[in-house]
Image (cartoon, rainbow, N blue to C red; front, side, top):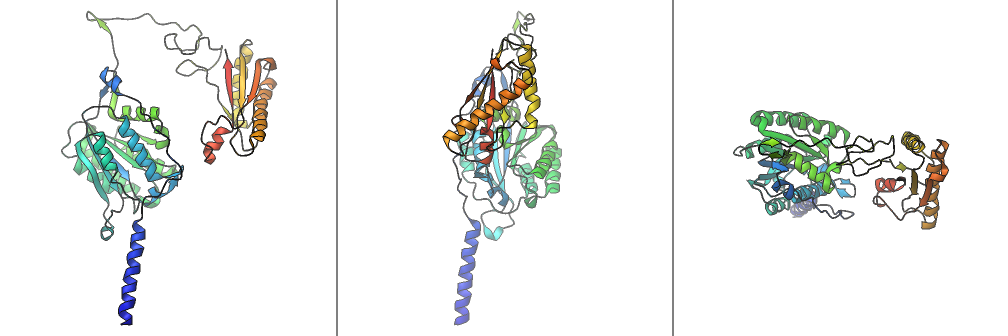
Length: 404
């Protein structure tokens, strides 16, 4: 009798342990910022953009390492949000869509199952893709990306036209067989040829993963690898969608079958950007401008509780000093800022010290002190969140604004 009871208790304990291993999705420590997608429909309807891809398949890494925290959320949660943003940004056009995950599946007895289709391939709809994403469960298991790529090859066998394969993964080596994944990508390219482009989105900053995921994207012959941080914003996601699904159309105006050639526009301020697209006319002489024709003054960042100018920012300030010397009627305002650690009163004083430190450096380089004004904002104007070390570092800054 004792042996039977002990055996029953052991089986029950093992069952509870296995249930704990399956787990649930971790809860995020902070909310994801609201997302307002760029509307690409108008440009598509106006003929400024045209559809390039007829089908897409998303392969989502749902392995164990994707349950790790990054920027206040699990990497899997960030992946799901990123794909939601892609789904919201896609314009109205006929598409075939699909979604796969890879990692250990939900059936513990099939712990070596590696990849699974959650959606499609089928006629794409935003609602259908959202429903497929809702089926993604907790991160677990290894990262058999090669199996997922092979499964995608079978899933897309009946798909016509151009195909975009989108892989979302952290690329962590302890979970992934890089060589097998690369071989699978090359085999898939051989199967579909020029019809297939591979786009890889990395979640997190694993350096070796960046290198190896880049090789997988290169195996497609077209497409590219990108970090999720680069396409997180509305503009960044719109650029990704255009690259992966659309292409820009060069519009040539024709009147009675004759191309209308306009006279070359002028560049009144000599900054290299013509007047018709120059959003910042009268740029100071010698200033380096961006594509809009606006003078870009780099920000100066400071260490915690410091206001000394670090060596890496001096070349940019030297360039500002040269512009101000060549344009003695131009004034500049320097605003100092801090993170929210410390009292508001202390931070206000520190922000003024930072602004004055930049002013002192410019004056030491020959700039007229009367042309420089300073102001401190303390912790009142954060550029980023104060909830993370990276965000606080972005808030410890001085901003330079030319008054033309």
